[in-house]
Image 1 (tube, rainbow, N blue to C red):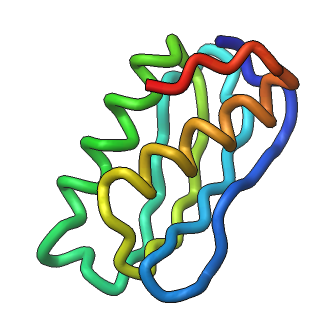
Image 2 (cartoon, helix red, strand yellow):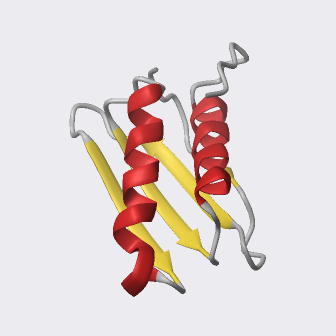
Length: 95
């Protein structure tokens, strides 16, 4: 899926994650993560985001994520929503 513009999903509330995504034309995927649980779960959070991007066939994206203790299902849904908003797509395929 090709990203077209900057988009976001999520909040800064406890147990949520705010994801801001933007196109990163021909530069792959870059993820910047801030998290209250980064030391314990940072690798897992990034892994969930990467797998979600792969499922949506996103090859070039820059992501800033600010996590407040979100579980994997919330992380995945926020990334999906941000991607669909950025791509201006209504062809939802929730996984």
